[in-house]
Amino acid sequence: MQAELEAQFQEFVRARWSHLVRTAYLLTGDAHHAEDLTQTALAKAYRSWRRVSRADSPEAYVRRMLVSCNSDRFRKRRVSESLTDAPPERAGRDEGYAGVDERGALLGALAQLPPKQRAVVVMRYWEDLSETEVAELLGCSVGTVKSQASKGLAKLRTYPGLARRTPSGQGGNR
Amino acid sequence: MNDDEKRQTAHGERDFEEELRELLAEDAYTIRPSAAPYPQIRRRGALERRRRVAVAGAALATLAAVPAAVYGLGAGSAQGGTAAAPAPSSSASASASPKASPAPSAEPDRATAALYDGITYRQAREGLENCLDSEFTRDRPGRPGLAPPDAYAIVLAMRSTGDSNTGGDGVFVVAEADDEDRSSLICRLEDGVTQGITGFTDESDEIADAGAVLVNPNSNRLFKQTILDSGRWRLPFRWAVIGTAKPSVARVTVSYGDSGAEATVRDGRFIASGVLNEQVTRAPHIKGYDAGGKLVYDSDGDKYWDQGL
Image (cartoon, rainbow over all chains, first blue to last red; front, side, top):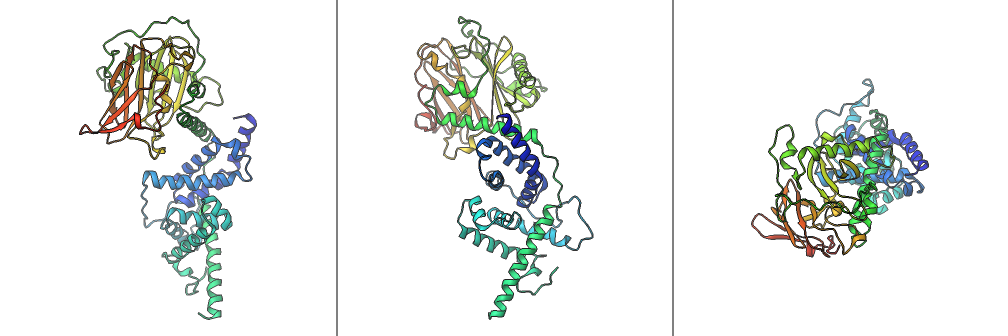
């Protein structure tokens, strides 16, 4: 890779690494998997950086790789992940915060979703992508994104700990 | 549901979406990512690039000149054209199975390494170390990082017949790391000095419709001389074919010109080697059999295998 492109890629990694790891964490639910997944996605970006860097949004390419590699992880290695009662260990957690239970519940709830549905939820509500952008990222129709998001939200609402946040207003609000 | 209830439901939907955004953000920020491991990312990226090139090389098998350029063994220091032919030995004869030396427990790969042409395990190991040293000490930004020598097992060592592209005679050492990607190296040395190195990883699961046997696309140089010497190969010629075999394959045979070999099949890998004494125009013919002796693979029907040279 030419020095200029190399420097550009290095700057991209430096600037976006943490955010991408966080996205990966929401996709996988595991901080170590998240870093590994992000490394894999960025390695693929490095491989094609000349082309990727010319795109409007290199980050969009890397996001796509994150989702794709995460799906591969499930497909190829048949990773089985089971839920535990305890939420994952977290660094820098504010134990006094009232939302701790919900946060633990959220990761558990996300783990219940199929990989694609989870990706739709993460991309829509964490990355704040539009339905069209998510459709492009996942290579599916906008209609599929809508339906997957709707199903995903419905499942999340029924998960213990999040159930009280139902739109019917029967539960309390934070 | 009346209008009020509908409005309330829609309002609740939006509330839930907003709260979901907050919860996702809160969760995302409960981890503290380590510093970006740029060297590792770069190394993996470079390896990915090389791997993709290698697969492309396999797909473009009719471009016979590609391997020398793509796989990029170093130019080497040519030593003149009349290097000795492979020395006959018990392990160098056609149809011979790999001969393994007794196995000290400290070197588990000693028992499984296929060593030909009188090359000892120690020589193969030193060759590998020289090969890796030459990479670690060379300032070549495009090279991926490599594991230390003790991370690799010697898979094969055999004489390398020089041709118009690679220079003089030497030795090929093939080694494999016990890592997730099953990364491998092919090193070529002359007089114990590295002339070139090729690194690649196991890509067999990327080819959905691959046959039960798959020759590694990076290994072409182990069984053919450069296209520049087409029709005038130096003989006798020590060759080898390496690749992967699905679990259903119990036996692999290779016939090549006037020679043939029964492959060693182990852990989903196979290695076959023999010595050609005649010029060939067709690539090795490979067959795979299951435990019952049923033919489960024939390279003649493999779209990924170029039968020409």
